[in-house]
Length: 336
Image (cartoon, rainbow, N blue to C red; front, side):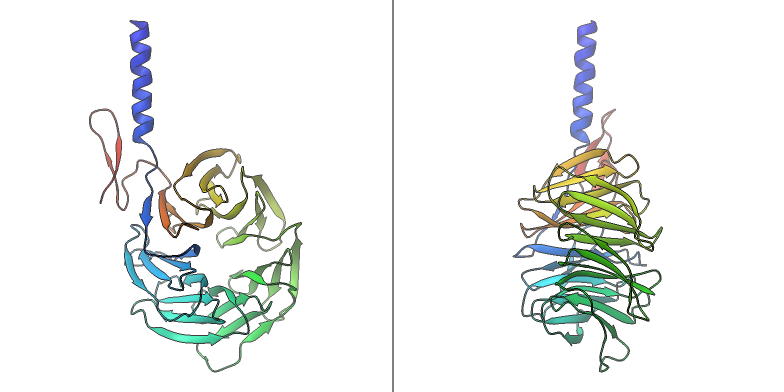
């Protein structure tokens, strides 16, 4: 009887673990690698997700389901960066056609085209959506006043290689930038001077700024590093099993996720740095990953041309995921 009990217990464990298997939602539509993505804040209509793709056609989706809403048409080259303002009323994109564009995210109409001298890689709105920050291959950070579109942008120089990411921080009074010169720099917006600088042995592959708590997440090689965004003092570093292209910290700072060369998504405990889970769903390297504003899911974009949405708490009823409880076993089914 003890053997039978052990077998039944093992069977029960197996059923439960199978039931709690991560079932990502796949968002198709792009025809080339997805290289950047961003969520809006939470609005009265939910939250939204924008994706940048080498097919030159950034897409807007409902954030919790991945349902396609529309495609922003107008770029004549690969789109390297995309962002939404908090209210999801405006979108901005950075492209290889030497332009950044601002869009009406409700109608899909192009509002502004901002000409640059080289490929644009990064776009970021101020909290009030009045200014747009851009960065790219001409090594110059630019600040555009969207209320005066005909005015020349403010320019900040100093990087010696292409800028990968430029982000507002500290209530839009400072700017964080990461470039191929292997540095991350913190700039004062008004003086345009460098306040602090970090140097690395290799190029930084991604950078995420968390305003709540002023945390900066940086990836380079196999390393995911966390810094105080104001002082640039290191908080901690974690080494992943593969080269990492992107990482994102959960809004509650309980854990973080990362993806890179080995097609997998990794989830780590932020406090202990322990690897909690890893999932393989993509068929190519993972280029970008971000948590949703409510922390219930994270989105990943890949070389395989798809976005995937992953549940933070596997087995929870949320969005298109539904948790069914037949008897004592839980069963996770995509609810679509």
